[in-house]
Image (cartoon, rainbow, N blue to C red; front, top):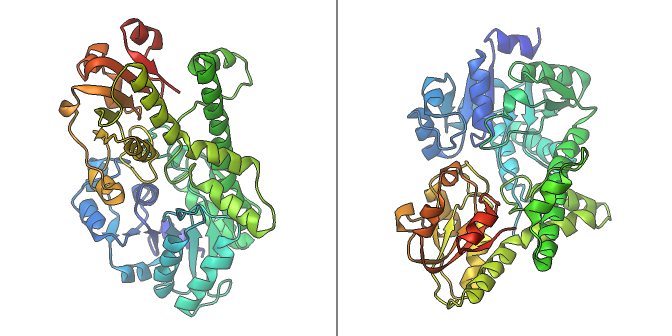
Length: 436
């Protein structure tokens, strides 16, 4: 009898190691299908929130958390109750852009200490090809005293959840699955098919699955970098980039990408994992790293554009009152990790400007811990010299022109990073308007 059948019959349990924006929705999904799920996270405060029926990620909502059967715990020994383990921890980069495997190595150590014979371990964290087998397996073996391929098996199934996206969810996105052998692959595929309505794609090996994930976001990164470079060029020409892209988009095979800040823990990070591995193999990436340089500099470019607009409006730059609306790495998501809005903040400080920041959706405690910034309520955004609409939260979509006018004193310098507003209307109303 296979582990898949044991899970279906509740003779065995499934565990999630890491209950963030990726791991928690997966745990919830399996529990909804009647699987016994152990949800483990080192963060006791987060576990307490889940136990209290609170969803700090806003991914599934408080009601779903209250009613789930997931056994949330910060006690690692509870992992011994499970036989099928899914590891979904972040894989960030260091300041020098090299991979920080600390979270996935730590998760492997914790799981290794509590691994039992007959288990299958599936990693979901985005890594460069080879990490699962060359980095994680030795840790699992050392900590458990068990032998991979004999006492336990491994697989890899890259996460594709898009935080804040209510359409492209775990259930609706085809899941890439892989295993160390055909038997493991078959079990891993069947287990994920329990929750993924869109079905699975069986990769030929673990390294192929790892590579597929890392190039997905690298491709998006390069395309957005091209759009960002176009926006810089067209701004110099006095041409509206959004209008150009709308015109070009009428061709059937034009790729619909838009310029913007590229942060977060996927698109702004994953390309560095691929180029790091390429460097290890003696190849220096050209296209990928060029795109990364452009995207990493966009916060600085936006801040400089703000300063130029202040000068054009004959406003004093030093100590200018500048408001930033939105701080998360993307719209309608509380996650501030690797937010490129902070690059705008840092660059404005170089000009003697301490911006005032508001974000109705951001995790304020996380922003304070990671960046040392504190948000103010929207009501305090008044008497401004410039306003930077940085994140396209739905909260800001309802703002009328009068709402923006009430934020200013004197000339109205408005930077609409995501192009949410009607450029012509705002320029005709006397705004010093700018967008990527």
